[in-house]
Length: 272
Image 1 (cartoon, rainbow, N blue to C red):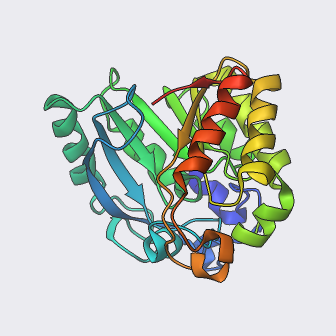
Image 2: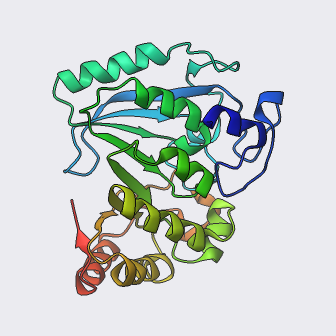
């Protein structure tokens, strides 16, 4: 079903309806096959998940100017070809084997991320199907997917780590070139919370405490009061961040402390 969905692609909320099997390309520029640009065991994720064996897909449907991985996240042609343009396996089994070895060596979970893995949903599901049934599988997403994508993901992943990047549609359109952002993300978060363990990530950006973190925190407090919230302070002015004066600097420590205090005051379940 996921492979067939690429004939009229509506996996992400752009709903571009291109036929990727015929070489048409939407905003993510992805074709049928998928590539992986990064794969290793990491310790930088949430404490409840690490060590994490991360498999990072190339290509994304968002265009965040501050993207820390830059071209690799934007360009689906970067990296090792996991599944070929005809949908054949290529390096799929070797990548799954590396994940199985990492689990046997002490990795606590396997995280599938990007870029954005939703745009490569068929390949991501093929990989998940090759991993042990008792493995903790983590879906790391920008939460910009559709009901069609959610239907295919139902019951597959044990944990969703979902970004809630922007607290308003104006910042989302200006910094990531997406529309109706808050409506779409909220819908995905409410669904994910009913299906799996949900961790909501928010990357604090300099100058965006009031316009982004405050409304995100308020909504989570009202609608998902018990959900685990990962407040990330590791912002760095990467990729095209210099286009925006406020973003062309690291996050001031004082802004993180104020953001943390706000989250606590709203009763959020902040996790390390």
